[in-house]
Length: 405
Image 1 (cartoon, rainbow, N blue to C red):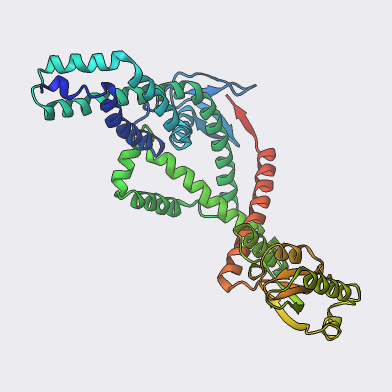
Image 2 (spheres, rainbow, N blue to C red; image 1 turned 60 degrees about the vertical axis):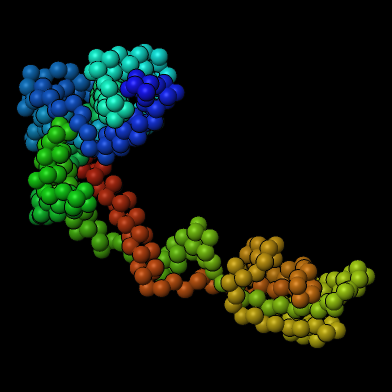
């Protein structure tokens, strides 16, 4: 069998299988910032004064915005826009799969590969497989680059506008930090970058070089983290005294979280009367016992009456079950207990032990351990901080002098 025949099985199908794995690797690299987008341009676009549309500038260091007399340059906006683009991810993987499916189905793809085999004068199956992988990689990289160019052309104006707004907010945040004497977060920014590098199994220098290969200077990331750290400290200093989380709020938070995860958020205090049924009982006996249970229900006068009611029925058993977990009760009784109000008695129900009559006497939140309570309290406090932080930033932006050029 010659090399041409070795590579023909199902024609482009074998090519598709090899290259699809490469496609997924490249797509993942793009989404996580492991492939190289277009390099940053030093002649960036800047917003017009009215609608924020971009127009060409002569140089990357041209001032686009003044925030309380502090400049933001076109280069800074372009760098931040590229960083946003790298982190945007989006549906690139799905689009790459669709584009690759088109390439595989195109008869010209296999024709090109067969022509390459002839040009390289491939003799062995091993040589053909190596060439096939190289050919697929080249096709995939070309498709990926084309998708990037398309996405860049369509979304970069949007990313630049977002970058401009982010930088304006960060300037305002850092100015407020300086006004309050807050450290501007340089050390924290370095720590965050070091952690990111470590998670990617790189040194600080290797990570900085990788980011640079993607067109973004590492200082762009550092500046973003620096502003975030400084702003957190501003918010903490200004609003810590205003944050007060009650134990009731913590209980409700824990209960809500437990309900969402399917755990028992509460325990029910119940009382139960059981009217036993003998084995092999007939329908008439069951009906009679139901009638007995219904009669007890009609004379029910609250949870305290359950013990006396049990004495009025033959062979009835009273159980003061105290607090129980709803998950230990079978449906539909569990749902009826959860929906009942304190003091309610449920209709009689058939169970394995006989005819049961439940009364709901009270309920309480499941006691969480200290870690759960601390976590819930921190989450509630964080929500309050975020509300106050947004309000404070809005006020600062309203008071700031922002000049677009």
